[in-house]
Length: 157
Image 1 (cartoon, rainbow, N blue to C red):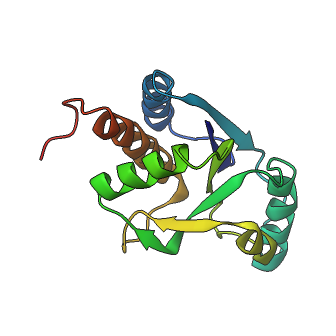
Image 2: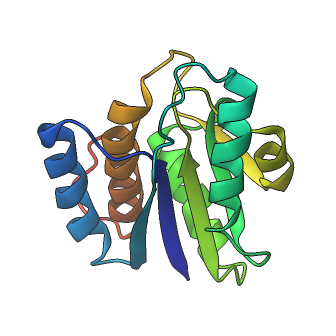
């Protein structure tokens, strides 16, 4: 199985980028892992939010295939503890899914077409986070999940 993480727009803070890079290296010890970045739309200041989400959704649709199991990071998604998330990942690795795709949307979330395409939604918290720091939070949790699955001492209970 492969895991792909898709971001909308480049990471703007160097410390976030460095953290993502560190966890990306660590995750690759456990599984085939790739990060894809969708270019942020230009000149959107005067565009309605629905148009921005639709255009981002069109671009995102070109990055996923019909065979991908797509999971959106969304405030209305299911919440997991770290242990529950590890079990979720472990179960997905056993189901024959070829590519597990996690998507962190832009500032306005996802278009209706992307919501319809998604197989599942996950929420990191009831709190709202900017899409920039969510990138490092999620990559750390993905790494943590693999250390839990492997019984390694990274996660303390």
